[in-house]
Image 1 (cartoon, one colour):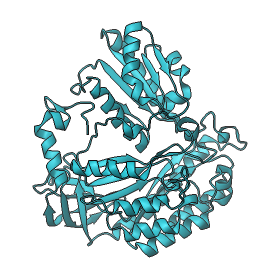
Image 2 (tube, helix red, strand yellow; image 1 turned 180 degrees about the vertical axis):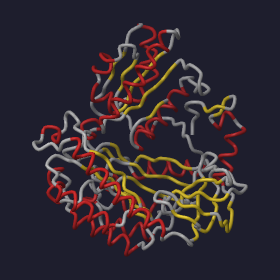
Image 3 (tube, one colour; image 1 turned 60 degrees about the horizontal axis):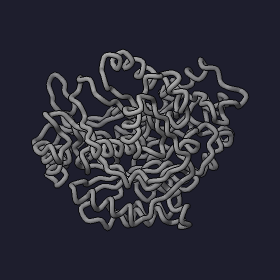
Length: 469
């Protein structure tokens, strides 16, 4: 299973893994030739196309030597390009879209029996992905989709045409999934949606997202709640109040800015302006002074001027982002921005990107240095952490979602370590002064996965696809 793109794609891959496991598939040991390779694709940026077709090209000769091997391509790029995938890579067996991931096993069987490629792209969602079985990669943290699709019409974005209009799950179904996850040992959930804080629009409840956050606070055993990504247009004071008043909602906000120039935001059709954006940040910090705020920014959008770029840099300095995910604009066929006049030359975009990155890094490092001396509680993540010549450290996330490397202690992924920050870099902290260790139910769940193949997703020491959560 190879996943490209956003957190929603990761969520969908977990469901694909669950569906495949139910059909009898197991993940092969790393390095072995698989009977099935699945690509869950992204279509947001140009390099997503290059990455997919590059991988498919490398697999062509492997498949030619491997009798019975199958390749499936799904996700946003498959939804967009559908016939193009089979033209450019005729050795692919199945192409499926974002709305029919549950049909993959049947499509694979049909391709095998008929000895011909299968293409199935549904135009609307029939089954909400969260109703499908899942094989989660983590024993202690989980993605929970509360909606799919988007009702916005940003001129640079192709997602609405690929994921469709927003469809919301009922609150009871979401909370039931969260409670089931907690019962299995999960202590952190991230609520997912293309526009997560527009949740409730489909059933006419404008405060539904704030109510959902408060309801998550009532789930016993749920230690951390996060969400991504909100849209500034729909960000209400009620959501800020719910975040501040619900103890297990983390003091962290990822809210895409895209540009600090009002004229660029207007051409992007983003339906807010920089003053509204900065006002939200001001109110978030008033309610949660230690909140970490991150963002997405695009540089080089059509018509962007030097003055527009300077406005964006000014917003970065004023907003004090702890991290900014920065992107060079690239034309995506099918979007209004692709045919706009005044496309910015690539060399100008590249130069502006370097300047944007320098300011974003400077601000992030300045914000990180403020953390030195503070005590943070770190949820230890999977893996061995950082190693250097003298030190072995474990890695995890603080409450505000900063990456923290802590001095090695006897803990498991899913356990908590409280430590004092001793060093700051732009994108991580080091906390070598350990204050305390808390062994958790989540750590117990991780440990159980290591010894029980039926519960762990492990076969002969290797992870398998699709062990049911």
